[in-house]
Length: 182
Image (cartoon, rainbow, N blue to C red; front, top):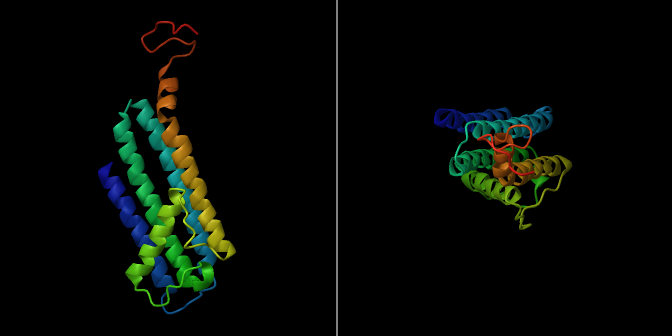
């Protein structure tokens, strides 16, 4: 599992690096924006399916809650990084995509700014110091917020309830075969 997560982190960074190569020397390739939106949607689907898969696997294997939370923390970090890099790419395509002026910022500062923005989106804080200004920026931001909502609200808050409900055999008996009085 550790190897898989490390590979996923490297894949996220490799996709970003590849996209940066696509943009290098050409501020607005014709296919860059649609490709970025498709990549963002593909990653959102991957992370959503991955989170649900891990939820069911953790439930099936009776995984302790703290271990499941660690896996979700790793997944959330991957999601935040992935969207932060998407926002950075979107800014490279069109600097007017966001309400922040990064014309004097270094690459590190720019990537940090969008990772910060992604973290605020994912944690539902959204201070408002960076806001999306274009439809593609709003769409990708909305996609991250919806994924965060599903991850935090449905997966994390319902893990124990799901674990208990899947652990009970049909007919209301407890896992040891005794009736639970319902």
